Image (cartoon, rainbow, N blue to C red; front, side, top):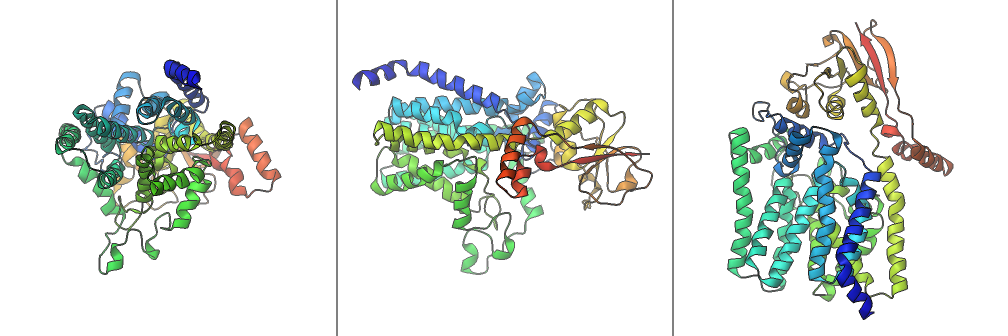
Length: 530
């Protein structure tokens, strides 16, 4: 056993490089790319930045543009390499691989080399990390920077190093620039201060200095980009005031976090729904079936080594679920990607717990959990299909000989997938939908950021020639002169056919079958308007 451990200590860099190689291969094999959700906004603002666009003049003010740390690195890459899809996801991939290296380097100091390498190996194939490592969201990046800040803090506290406290503050600042939820890290840190003596005032000053350095840099960047150092705050709150009513605090019950029954937005504020989210999402597999009990056990028993990680898992989970951070009357949306800051800590706790087991039982427990991840990786990869949008982009970017009118979202997707080609002729229509009162808002902010000259019309009467693309399920009456020329209905690939065949064989509901269909069974019809 001693010889085995000495070998691991000597050869851990080789093992780490092997794990990184496996992780990179898995991520490239299951490459996802652009998804047409929040990434639409990050990509649009990155493109705008790369093109030297004027943020303030285009009226770009929302929670997404406030996150410099999410889209500015992407914008710098676009400046150097172009708006190719691999460029849009390169920062997320780099953060994912850096997170694996961080797990080894930090956990070797906090625990031991075996646990560190085991955690890194699990992270290499953990679905939530694999999925978001090749998507242009902010979540993989904020997960890395939050983990770096927290682990640096633990090491800095152990060594009482002012340099590490300064780096902790810098990492926390970058995490905050990436996503506001990074400030929730202060909760487990504050509890650690309460449980044991906090670091000396000088050390905390160094950590605060690191954060303030990043904050000062942010103010300077906003002054340069928008002429207003506080533009982030105005952007982040602008959408809230426009979309959601401000809660009136009349009774004591109004101060309890979460929405009132008639104000529910996307999800109910209940423990049952929260539990189902962790138990049924493919991004997690069966991981949290084990990690939550382990975390609670570590806290109750006061295990010194595991306690900080357990506090991180419990605190961030509860705050993300129930604290109304973004909008006063609503909890945060419960998407698995919000929990990327927990990945390293959760997997390290799992590895720490299995170290207490006999080798065969440990292998069985870890093997079972990893085995649950295999179908999860398949489902997540197949269900992220964007075939319809990609076909539309190929048509608009190559075949179309005139303007192609489409919905706001489809137009933004096509612009991104066609790499914002100069030859792209795109228009936005609101046929069958309620158009905004302000004509300047007919094209969404993502389109205004990338292509501010994009024409937009309210209804079919506004179309003056060209192609018109409509949802295949749209039954809106159209002008008789319009000619139906094509239907976009992507064919399922081999993996999708296998999955659909299995679900049909076991009589699964159609909505699950559609989940594995190209673009979730969506289709589009193309008309020629003369």
